[in-house]
Image (cartoon, rainbow, N blue to C red; front, side):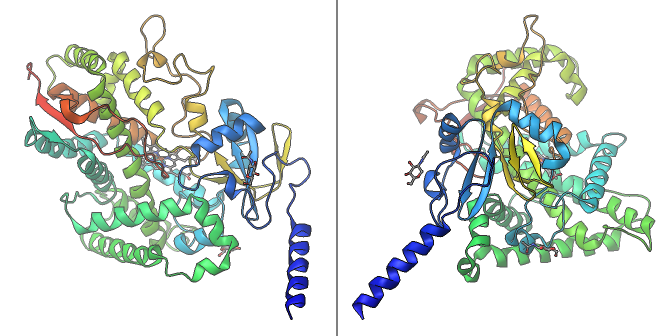
Length: 486
Ligand code: HEM
Ligand SMILES: *[C@@H]1O[C@H](CO)[C@@H](O)[C@H](O)[C@H]1NC(C)=O
Ligand SMILES: *[C@@H]1O[C@H](CO)[C@@H](O)[C@H](O)[C@H]1NC(C)=O
């Protein structure tokens, strides 16, 4: 009996060793692949960014890692990033369509939709609709200012005492995108927003991480009572309610917001809506809300962390704001052209914030080549955007917070090519223009009115962020005071 077990065991080990995966011919190099586990021991699932940097030193700008039996190709540095995302745009514009994503998104929406007509139509529609909000009454700027009022009110009640801005900026970013999508905001303690934000954050962590890959490779974890499955259903229900309400009150041809625009488009398409449908709209709205909330709020939080701990930079911003806006009661996005220093600071904040460090994962749409390596169709691609934002040789000061990175000799604002926090190519962030407007108007308006400082008893600031799909600054307090001039 005992002998048989040992014999069986030896056979199993032998078979596993035979199965040991090897990289396909001319595939990007990487650490040796263990049976079953692949390379998961080579990276920390908690925070792989340091490991990615270390592996880059051993294997170069393009290397591969096996997440279990499935390979992923990591792209580092500006040269390789552009070679893939820009010069071979079509080959690299897919999204992995694995089981996890299939099941949670039901192939709807835009962020995780694969490269194809449905994605393209929705992306084009969103870009056009967001652009049209830019003008006229109830413009994008008005919607943003509508929310800034509440932020100011909250800051005014917190003057002089330590204040944690995390929740406030999170809610503000969420409300701005709700203004765009649904034409309304939610009180900061509204249940709808709490549920949506909580659940989407959870799902995103999973979809863009090693767990989703393991979910596909290891059938046994699929049966686990994963909390996000249920939470996801709840959110869909909530969104459905919101759309029903909208349908009752809308006036066709006179859209109040994004949802109305989509419904007008559905009317226009009539019998032949192609990929447009109400179900799509539901997922689309949730997608946009998710994509626009954590990203923007974590960037702003990073901004105030640095501004309150670099007072001389904050003061220079305020001097520039005071003189550029003299006599105006509020800033408009066009004023940025008279504020090179402020522009440099905002871009530098985005650079060090590295808000979406690994972008959203891509996937090759056909057999292709990158930097001399062959990648078959369907290969998972991880764009390491952080490796571009602090790449040696691309920046005057890659490893410190310094607005000089975006100022030329004549003190004019300039944007180095390696500035790609929104990624690059056809999948590039669809909300870039909205995000840039929010960052500018919120930072300028608040810096004009308030001074932000680091509490004396708070110790040394810790700039190291918490890892996730979006990097989040560690919770901190700041002290808000009214500026003398106001
Ligand atoms: C500072 C704020 C933001 C940052 C840093 C950011 C960054 C990114 C990045 C890195 C991607 C992935 C691009 C790729 O796959 O190559 C992305 C995609 C996307 N973002 Fe943003 N984003 C921000 C704000 C927003 C806002 C406000 C919206 C909402 C309108 C938005 C909507 C989207 C959408 C819909 C996608 C998916 C695009 C596609 O798959 O075609 N983002 N964003
Ligand atoms: C990867 O992990 C294996 C197993 O733990 C280890 O032997 C190897 O040295 C690691 N390689 C790298 C480059 O980290
Ligand atoms: C995801 O769904 C699509 C269509 O519903 C199907 O063609 C595809 O094979 C599915 N992918 C996986 C990994 O199940």
